[in-house]
Image 1 (cartoon, rainbow, N blue to C red):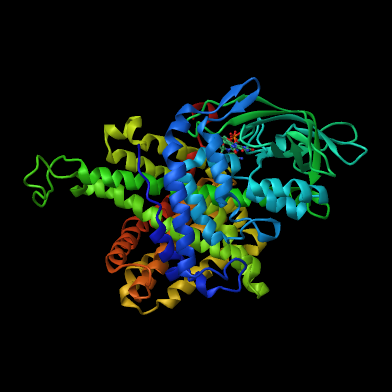
Image 2: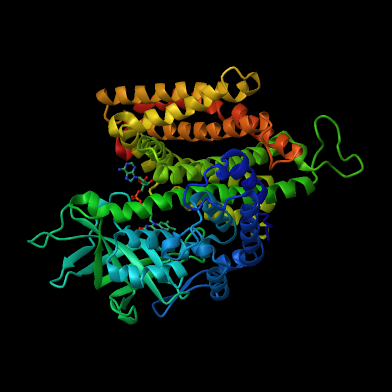
Length: 604
Ligand SMILES: Cc1cc2nc3c(=O)[nH]c(=O)nc-3n(C[C@H](O)[C@H](O)[C@H](O)COP(=O)(O)OP(=O)(O)OC[C@H]3O[C@@H](n4cnc5c(N)ncnc54)[C@H](O)[C@@H]3O)c2cc1C
């Protein structure tokens, strides 16, 4: 069984020395974020995850969710844990105070996501949409929904799902077949089948509200083969009295089956059947596809950042356990001479290859966390900064960072967890140490919430070109501003040099991809994945540069001298070993297109 020590000290350093949240008191939720207060919150959060959730994690996933008489049975231990989760207050900590949450800002909920991924991801996923669905329904929902659904989600007494995927389409939702027939009373009747719905059913709460995508058929009863008639519907598992909120009869919602899958065994991934189920349209005011889909975009953006952070959470726990193992396991001798001459052999941590695996993972975990908190601060500033131009600028940067973080963090997180398994050799491959558990769980992050290849083409073809290229400009300008701060500082050159080169390589790769696409429609698609990976490495390099700048300037109230030296070593490692990959990926991005695309499909 793996151990877990929540990285509280790292959060305190990143929040107070790097992001300096205490300087943003006028932002909502920031007024109390003094170091003493955040330390108390983080320690309570850590204790709950280390002592209550973590001990049950592996056994619950091994027991798995089951379908019994058409209903999902979660592992027995989940009943008590779900109750403890509700009572702890962590479920609603990030929800706005106006609707009953604690109003903690995103800079604090990063830790809630990360610790939850590491210690109880299957359980957490049943409740993961409570917060975003409550906020979304409070923004776009009808009065009865605000009165009777939102409070139940805030309390964690009901859960929510996001139901988009169908058996024949996940990425290409234009092909959706679930239909929503308008009724004279303003409701809809929803019919169709959704697949892979996380937490589609559970035995932990009184009701489940499904947020369902469906098409409204035309007058002739046919469905358009595009997104123009797609709308978002609230479809409760059990009907709800609009006056009192009391639960009524079952709605036409049933579980067709649950999937037997690679990881996350205790979270039921369901085929959900909707048979003439009563649904309520949720939409932003206004007409057209954008208004229809606003509610779903709200959930999807929230989910993508959460999935990105899973790469950090899994890497943290895997690295801790692999490092502990490497300090104990004896094999071979250090090349520079024995460090354990009285023992049979030296611990494997002396070997360069083991250090490559362990320190590469740690450099990602801590650099990714730094970028996660930077992004979370941007989220608050993008909504609440007094200056409109500043809000726009930050929104533009987040438009770029959202697909980059979703895809790169889950790719890199999976690679790191896999590297940590390697540290244990054969002992990593068997279940006892838990490393294979994290490899299996982490893999799906690359697939759901928009597969990573789709994030890459979305970045290159859409996000960076949108608004006349303003997001692209805003992202590079923000990095240039960091570089300008350290201009002429020789001690920072080992960080700023590779970061400056990365901006040049990225701009060149993008310009070449855009130009090549004019002659070859596949060119941007060929280059997209490498370009997204370049962005991911550079973005973490940017975060590490800021961290190094704080340490070298001696502005560290929350880091011991030894911890500061360790951090600097990790920042250097990212600069020296990851940043050079950007040039190599840039060179590859536009080469090899013919090799990818010229062969006939049946020869692939
Ligand atoms: C454990 C788990 C939980 C999930 N939870 C949910 C949930 O709660 N709600 C929900 O709605 N869905 C959920 N999903 C579904 C998930 O979002 C989809 O699996 C994902 O979006 C991919 O869709 P697909 O499986 O149909 O693959 P496809 O869309 O068939 O794609 C297959 C491959 O082709 C690539 N591809 C497809 N189209 C293109 C294109 N145009 N250009 C380039 N490449 C392309 C994709 O990147 C992918 O690699 C879950 C899936 C899993 C495995």
